[in-house]
Image 1 (tube, rainbow, N blue to C red):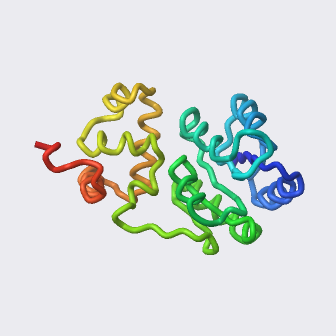
Image 2 (image 1 turned 90 degrees about the vertical axis):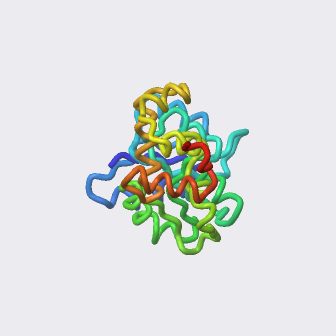
Length: 209
């Protein structure tokens, strides 16, 4: 597994790298201290997972880097590791593409589990993170902005090529969004997806007639 880290404290970066590389076949290939540095690095080689801090030196935060990954490299999964372990940081990070959220206070105990879960497309939020999600807001909270745009289209039965044309994205990217939507919402059929979209108010019944 190839991993990237964006964190402006070298001691934290070093400790994360040491912890992660204790796992067989895990390698940290990007160590960045700013969003600018991370963007340059990810253009050259893409890790499977990026671990992102929110508070960074410079004008851009980790949240802007999450948004960049979602738009430019949607196949790269991301985990936030931050001292900001409460709302609205958590919901904002998830909406911008993070699949995992770990408090730095428990990172030494939970980061490995988070990476393993996110690598499988599962969401992971450490227990000490203050985050609550009502079932009626499931889709709005779990999905990124781009995935929210794609959700009603896939719910109506459009294929990835059609969705790509409507959203003006590459078909490959549309396939990634579809896979992420199904994984995050834990559905396996278009009927299950349609039900969630209706329950969440993303689409109305009269749109289907």
